[in-house]
Length: 363
Image (cartoon, rainbow, N blue to C red; front, top):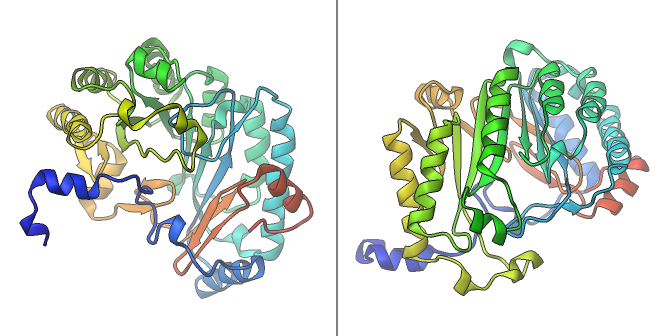
């Protein structure tokens, strides 16, 4: 019985690598996967029940110029930026197939577009516009009830990216920071000096982004209570509107890059938990409000205001202040959902491209 376990026993029992709580059941436990036609019929049926069903779109851009060794996402490492054009063609082909098969997508209100990766700003600012403009021109967007958001890598994101996104109506960015400590950054192959994150944060606010999020990860190699305290204090100094504080899931049997570490390189158990507690305490003392298991927001951020109203929601894109009953995922490995069904795209980029260019739904 849980009541008979002390804290150390609970930590030992539940300190295991597991998927983030984006769905129930989580992806590894999905069964009875729908066929492409079953998935299309599920979308048609959902919109037929209510033509005004609000929906969200997720677009996965898998490209990165280097591999971060902690990463658990679906990525494709390359310096070849010709991929921007060919992948855009594939995304447009997939979208056009959906529009042909489910015309309601053009009329139902689109509340959110989120670009994730990978590194979406692998694309140039101009190519982000080339990707998004044709899609956004075909859907029903009310600017007063729309959120555009994107994950950005400070190492490759420039003013041209931010200005292009603001031109498209995007208001929120999420930065992968992970840790400010140079030794940790070296070990995870993500050299990102403090000044780089600071300057991009300032620039994002200068060009008009309303909300800036930082992703931090605890449980990485070489992290200590002292070093992670400094990372938390530096984060507070830069004052992002939101903070996501994720636990590193060490899964070397799934992610080959994790094999560059051993368990002995990583803080674990109570040593790992104390990293979270240090950061959490500092964030709360600095005026952030805790949302869920690992998210924090400032009291004037829309996410906290939604929490106060009892209108906070969560989907595969994370916490949101907008409820939508349909999430449509475009791109390799993207996940979609309706109230009664999950669907995931092909995880292999070449197979994905081949299938969508042939007019298929790439289940």
